Image 1 (cartoon, rainbow, N blue to C red):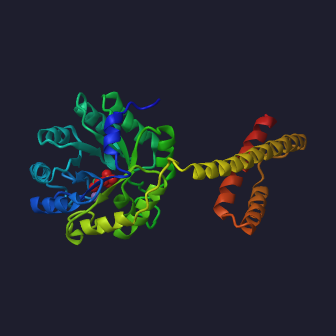
Image 2 (image 1 turned 120 degrees about the vertical axis):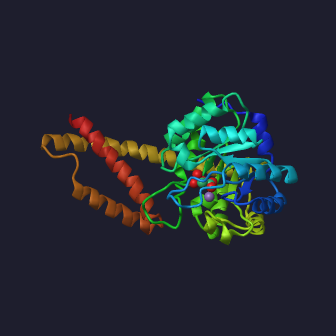
Image 3 (image 1 turned 90 degrees about the horizontal axis):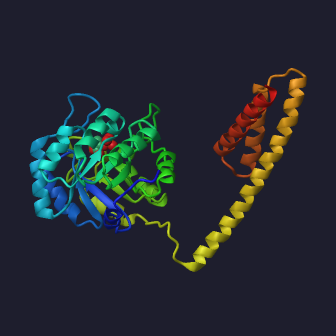
Length: 359
Ligand code: PEP
Ligand code: MN
């Protein structure tokens, strides 16, 4: 089902090539917020100034945010800079306080999106208003939870919605703080092309160095904007110090990003792309026909196995098959991973198909 979104608001907010939300991880002092906001105001395309007022910390005894007094500071930021303000809300009380202090937009944090009770409470609290709500992916790699949170706001009449991709928690050690698992936001995009998605490279990367490459990757994949953490003196930040950048550093990162487009305006380029797509379509047709030929042979092999009371799955055969395909693929410069994924899927399917035939 298509989401009902406020197209006018989306067009205005996304009017620039890539929209930007920037500001510190946490509101720490009035001075910190004003310094950050005045510097960030100069950046092109900044649509919202962000700051965490209540911080969901993984472990206790960390800085948990200033709470309500920070909302007064943010009002001052808005007065002085004219920037729109966005904060994270996780409870009905947070929403009430946000409205009371003229906050312009809300975001739902990753830990909250993972909790349908909390999402429902917030969705009910914003019902009847036209506040924009930005919904981060849940902390665990579960697209349904992300979709569920978006739907809960839709059901309560919210039409100004965007998704934020901030990566997923895993136990595995990796160079990322939160694994991007790009396939998940891309699947969200496939299911809801009408819903803009922005990328939060700060929480995916967890370090300053990863902000630029992650942002470029997001641009390449057609994301609609970025949410980046920026602090006047990142090293002294009370939360997420390693991943925050000073406003002038953010400005330099942004100026080096190359914007990409999904819309082709140049006729010559369009013809070339169409030509390549036709070639790819032909090859995919050949692949499908080959899969059908393969399946016909599987029917014969299943009959033979059945006659001779053999099992459908023989692990040794799978090992040999993967080994041979990997060698053939690598010799042609294909990645081992691609060959493994493709042939595991083909073999898996073949075993299932044979099992069905044998019953
Ligand atoms: C944040 O944006 O500061 C934050 C806490 O994000 P997340 O919910 O993505 O961890
Ligand atoms: Mn943070």
